[in-house]
Length: 199
Image 1 (cartoon, rainbow, N blue to C red):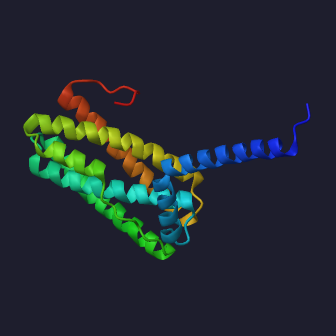
Image 2 (image 1 turned 90 degrees about the vertical axis):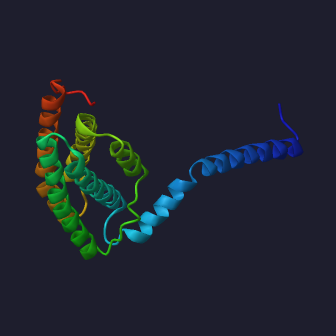
Image 3 (image 1 turned 180 degrees about the vertical axis):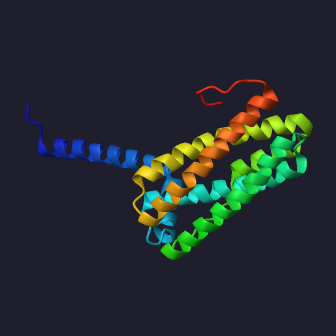
């Protein structure tokens, strides 16, 4: 059936209106994504967007490890947990400084590293004492370091920047060692043997 030209134009107009509505709806769902992309483009310096995303997360995680490590030094009941907290402070301060120096050389600027997740974790751990604190802190450290190891392994393979790739390759064994130590302490203080599944 051949439709009159006016009908065809009306139908095309409906499709265009529908497409525009869908596009606007999707745009409304992802305003933060656009803002994040703009921030990455403005702050990443010589780094690619994917490398910058990794370093932004690594820096945020490193600061959190230092803050929570300091909390463990103050509050842990078990000496092994306290020593682990001391190591987190020492190792992650050094790694954070190395990463900061690398970013400065690349002309990259980190965004505000305040984290809602860190705030929630600190708030939760602050109200705990004794063995309850120890178990919660070590559980968080195991979970976070499992994620960190995966992220560092992926970046070690896929990093675009040679200097960043070298730093990640040098840092990965330290993060892996942190995970092994946290798992060992968790096993000791909870009596539960580690498994290959994520906690």
